[in-house]
Length: 70
Image 1 (cartoon, helix red, strand yellow):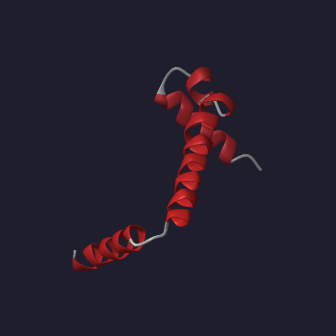
Image 2 (cartoon, rainbow, N blue to C red):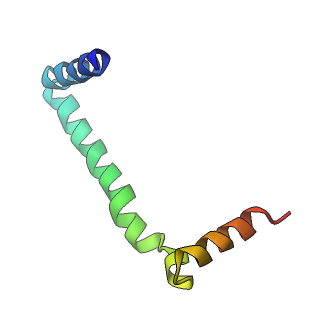
């Protein structure tokens, strides 16, 4: 647990002592990550298995069949 605390302190101090330009760049990076993983996923990557199959058993059988195809 001591190592996790040291890692947290390292990043916390680094971000706290960062200049204004660095903070603005990190905000831009975080906004872009949010857009890529939250918003684009909703519109461009629908849950196909959820739409095509009604139970977990059917979904798992489909995935196993697709993976094991030669």
